[in-house]
Amino acid sequence: MANVRGVTVLNVIRYVRETHGSDRHQEVVEAVPEPHRSTFARPIREASWVPVADLAAYLEAAQKLLASGDALFFRRVGRFSGQLERGSQGFKVMVADPSTAMRMGPVLWRSFFDVGRLEVEILGPREARTRVFDFPASRALCDRRAGAWEGLLSTPELRVEVAETRCCLSGSDFCENQVLWIG
Image (cartoon, rainbow, N blue to C red; front, side, top):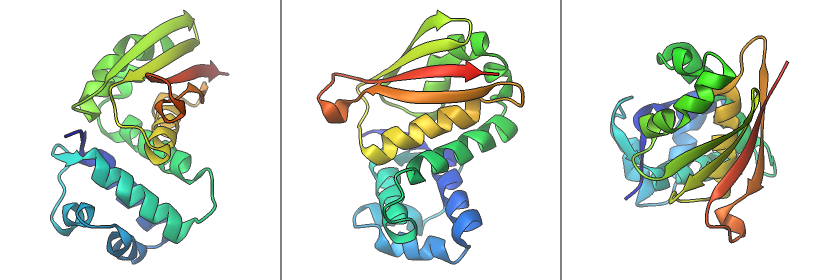
């Protein structure tokens, strides 16, 4: 079973509460289909592991309930989460500059996910191509990941743009993104 760190789930819940109101979280939980709902009935710790499928179910329920038709919802949730991680979890040193972030990408991946593999191909001083192998793909997870990288890797001086170039959902063997630091 594929798992994600609890902090990732907690940041999504925080996004829902801060953006749509604290009472909306419970509505989202009630909209999450079983068996995924049980994850949200117990305390989630930052360092615990939570099934990735439960995160995807929560994201999909939140989008349907709170932002139906909003194609950028998952990316915004991810960007919010990435910004929180950059500022509060001690990852700032690993993403301090593009060169360091590109080298530390696989380590960062393992900090958040217990499955899959991230490869980073450095294309230039401010450009990389990433490939994610053997990780469950869904539109919610892929878009959230792109947004999370934008939030985590951006600085006041350099804004990061992430563009999907290949995806398992389209039949590829891996998900691929172009990462560009602009500034």
